[in-house]
Length: 108
Image (cartoon, rainbow, N blue to C red; front, side, top):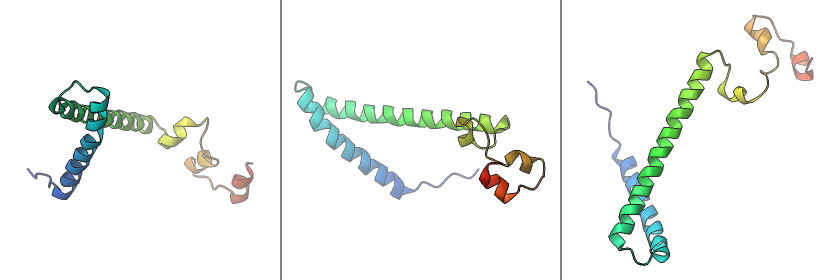
């Protein structure tokens, strides 16, 4: 079985970004709750970042599943789902008919 390559540069950048975010959040949290120790603040900040990352992954998976459902049920494009109809001339193209360029642009 082929194992995917781990891009160490990307992992390093993610780690640096996490450290910077915790370094920015922890002093602000310390000002809001001065009675909490620094270790707990860093832990809670990391837990919050991990929770936000998990929610982002969950939202991405759910939206991709929804878009795939639209395409499997005959949707033309997932973005057209939000509008009331399909682009002009699409029905004719599906039937194999030629679409007149001027009629398509004029809305006829």
